[in-house]
Image (cartoon, rainbow, N blue to C red; front, side):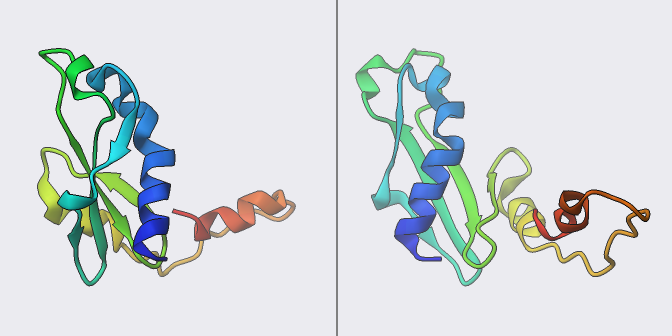
Length: 111
């Protein structure tokens, strides 16, 4: 995954979640992007900051893994927790019962 792909993914997946706090649509602030060996922290900010309600947040950081494409908000548990969640490895496959639908068999490989 490239940085451009990561920015598009974060905006598409999380942008709508910011709209109430931003008083409108969100955009990526590329100047605030943080680069790590596991991926990036990408900040969403309001497209029109002048429309942002006084009690609304001015930005939201999202961590995104550069291999899996999984993303998570960097919240009150800090970046370390977000990285922990993004880099979890599930080593034991789920033992689906016989006759499970195909989507159930594949779901253990998707975050």
